[in-house]
Image 1 (cartoon, rainbow, N blue to C red):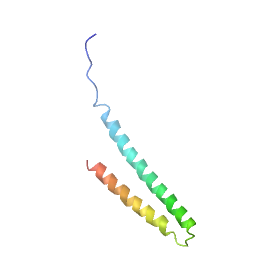
Image 2 (cartoon, rainbow, N blue to C red; image 1 turned 180 degrees about the vertical axis):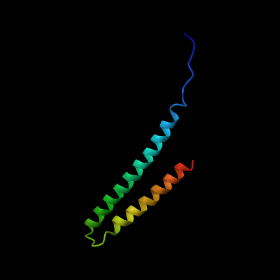
Image 3 (cartoon, one colour; image 1 turned 120 degrees about the vertical axis):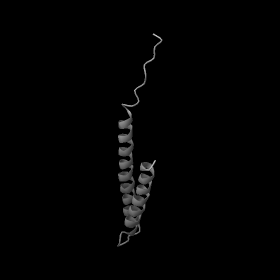
Image 4 (cartoon, rainbow, N blue to C red; image 1 turned 30 degrees about the horizontal axis):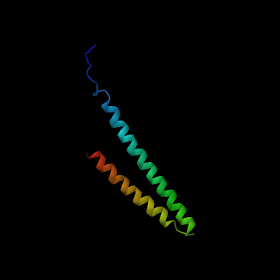
Length: 75
């Protein structure tokens, strides 16, 4: 009754890393998508002919997401 069984953390570790990187990919897609929607909305609200805010927010979110991905991978 008093015996404890050793924990098996080695079997769970690969799943944790897969989930970590899947989460980063999901964040990347959602961030760029939401930035695109926000930029599109701003361009429509200001009645601009060229989608400057759409492009600007997509590129800013892309570079920010890539930087975050780089930092997470290099840990």
